[in-house]
Image (cartoon, rainbow, N blue to C red; front, side, top):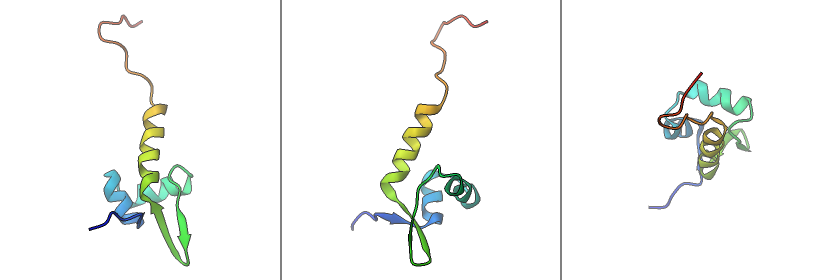
Length: 70
């Protein structure tokens, strides 16, 4: 069985563990890139990992254990 290169929005939402409406919001905002083939919108599977990496890199760093906070 081969790995699929393109996912439907429903499949991409399932892979990310989010709802389809949230995925369409991320598509609209340009957070998740997509390609259009005819009337079909598809998400490149490897782009999902890139989105996760970007979101992870943009989150605030957790304070170190034992660090004093003001």
